[in-house]
Image (cartoon, rainbow, N blue to C red):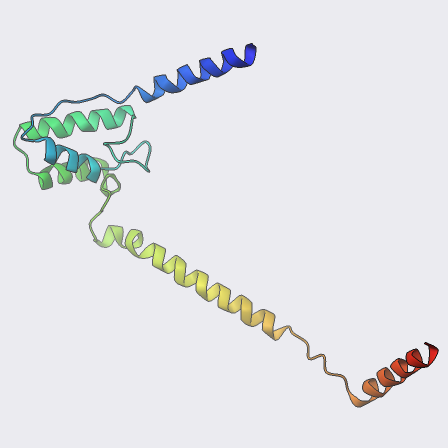
Length: 154
C-alpha cells in the first residue's frame, strides 16, 4: 500500500513540473513566424531543448518576449539579433560563423581528427611491441628432440 502511495505522489509531482509550460496565444498572422522563431532559439536552462519545447520559466519569458516583438512589428532577424545580443550566441540553435564561434563550428572536427591520430599512434605503438617469435636453429633442434622424446614415450 505504501509503495502505491509513493508511486502516485511521484506521478503527481512529475505532472506538476510538466504543467509549467504556458500556452501563449499569438495572432494567426504571426503564428507561423512565432513557431519558427521558437524552434530557432535554445532554452538556456535546459540547453538541449528549443524554447518551444522547454517548460522552464525562462523559456516562458522568451516566448512572451518573442510574441511582443512580433506584435511590435520586428522582423525575424531583429528578434534573433536581440536574443543573441541579450543572451549570447548560445541562445541560437544555429549560431553564426564568426571568430567567437569558430571553435564551436570546428571543434567537433578537431576532436574527430585528434581521435583518429591517437588511434593510429596506439595501433603503431602496439605493432612495434610485437616480438618476432621465429625460432633459431638451436631452438628448432631442441624442440624437435623434445617432440621425438615425447613420441617415443607414447
